[in-house]
Length: 79
Length: 404
Image 1: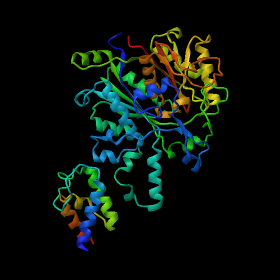
Image 2: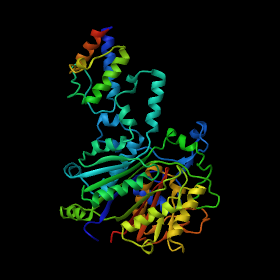
Image 3: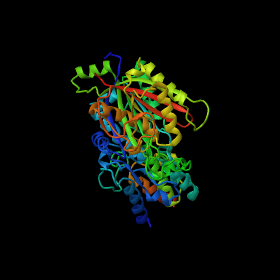
Image 4: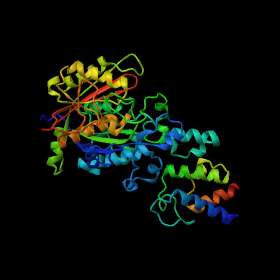
């Protein structure tokens, strides 16, 4: 289950960044500095994660997400 | 030339007749037509399947566009980037110049049908705004292209979108001249954009003004226009600033002079044109340029190929030039009607005529009492007066002249 969440989160990130010139996505990737996410990208990521996992994420929750690992943990906490 | 003259230093185009000014000029010189019959339109309820065949933009042209900006781009945004990059390159304008000087941007656009249709479809099926994503708002606002270009280019002057139907491009150019005349900005990037996709012209098609077979401006059997799209761009600067850039070791060519702009509104019917008010716009443009009718040697007609529109414009031209003393160019039989982009596209075509010493032909029979150029003429124009007229009776006319 947990492995599946990680794969699905990374899958969303992979889809979003398919045409970007960035390093491979891992749990340790920093969304902003490694994956070049801007504020709108974070918003788009939030919307996609909400839809895929059928959860609601509050702005203050997503603002604490720095690494991919943080996002995976946030999703886990809501399922 | 006066130091305050407004000079055109760059041009760019992405259209059904060519995706750069070189190809476009070659197509204009030849007898190429950019229109085709689109099966998809017939299958989707259009009354006419004749339209411009506008190529997609090469993705290589999108290099340097950030991810969030890229997601917010519609086809018109990509067309615009293609045209603007050509024009800035021709005008030899660097990124640092755009960032450090008072450079403005005026875009003519009047629709975002593609984006709006997508939003409507998602909301009708999902009923959840989260499915729209973060980019829908930026794709669907009418100012989508000006907001995107201003961010991409990093300019700090005025940035706005002009909406005035098919006269919008002419008005955008005129407003740019007014800004430069008033010394409010150093350079203006003027862009005209027009959607070319399936959803863009459905409501226009419903008016049954689209031709079934061939667009024939001023022709005997003309039966309507054909929609087309893309983007065109003109870079305008004051002569003084061009001179200053030249002294800074920039290689800048004075391609043409933007010498006058006039406008009028019919103030009556929503769609019916008015010869009197069209003539008034042309006269105002000449007044603005301190010119007489005898100074104008070419009129670049709006001439979309509709029965009433062309007849009315013929009457308007005859009011000012009753004796066939002016040559009349009309290219919409070959470019299609580029609507919100049309005025800027015509401005680009004027520069190509001035630079190349030719007048393109309509390649259809002339049924008017005007000296319509039906086949290409080798001729060096001096002052070309251009017309762009739009729904609601908004009329724009402008004059582009030799730079020498």
